[in-house]
Length: 296
Length: 296
Image (cartoon, rainbow over all chains, first blue to last red):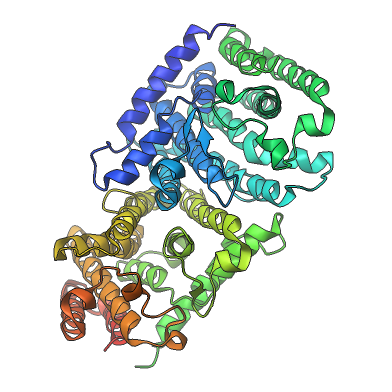
């Protein structure tokens, strides 16, 4: 499946806005800004901000108002990758085909660059551009994203349990907790934050929430599968890492075939949940198919 | 000088509110919440949140509305201590007389606990309790605090330059940049964020800003002096650390006597700048004297 044109266009929009919202490489102190940009502009898929923008478009939000929210989500995602890759956590040397931030800039700057992207994301979410009503929506988005990356059923919580489960046999419920907190929560929040920027009716918000939850899990299963079946070149990071560190994964627990079946089933359900949006849900449906097809 | 009663009362208020705003030790995953509470309830001086509350009181803010902002500032300060102490940064084993967070909980949990406190602070600043007008003020505070802890003349920027200057001879201007960004900015922002929560007139806001800038620098010089002259027991952390790591400090650049004179002079100027507040500025004046007297 070729990358659909709207996804390429979204990536372009997002990169342009990220470029605007981050201090330049020449801003003092240069090392931290270079590290931030090195990681943000490393060729990521921009899945989360694209979901945010498309969810917002599906409920009639003004694009210009959503872009900063989408960028904040991507900054937070990037911060989490930088910190995950650190020696004390996953200890990865390679990310998106390049040395990880701590390999390139040293561990101290990597820790601070992660901190800085998290901080910058909240600064952007709290910025006053646009005035009263927009601010109110953006604060709704801030709360949603804040919860998704926090310690209670959010990204940090999932990361802690993931680390503490390494090398242990864990039950399926715990694997589900790790996936839904560590990666699922931010993906769902990206969709919901987009919905808050428009005028989503309650039934539309629940449809988008269900969609977000299901594709969040589908994408994580897909990543687990790719970790098993890909070469380093295809993956852009060290493959087989999950198995070598004895991480809990779907293929590890259910096998490859059942994991593929599960991911496809989740995409079908996610897409079905958008029926109430009719034609306005088309791009979100395409996104779901496109990102999960990678592991087919 | 005995600790003034109002400072003790502020500490009590702040600790009670922090206890309410942080997940309990029993919340899953327990390790991260225990690490967060271990560091937040380690007996800090609560200087920043006290400044925030007193600045707010001086311009007639409602106390209940300011408390969450004050707590957010303290969470951010604590996050910065946890990350500063990490092996890749200052590599400190001792803080406030106890093992640092990475010594007690491991490096991975320490990195994530710092991330979590930063996240929680912004969640609290973006919370909707209180409705429209309060939200607007809180967002002003969020912006102020976000700038103060960011990379451009904020805490992270100062920390980066501090690390990169270790072991080098640096000019006085660079030392000033490090101090004003790394610690000064958040202290000034604590005062200004408090002022935003009330109805500070423009001349009152500039008076408080000048006060905040000057005591921020005075406190940093005081800390530098204490690092030289105190024992580990008095200090609660490894003393002489600055010299052994060849950190840039005031006593290193100007000597102890001149540093003491400079700190006192800054306090006098800070106090003078509050004259327009008349009696409402009394507690802020007392705070300035009290915290700098430690190094007299």
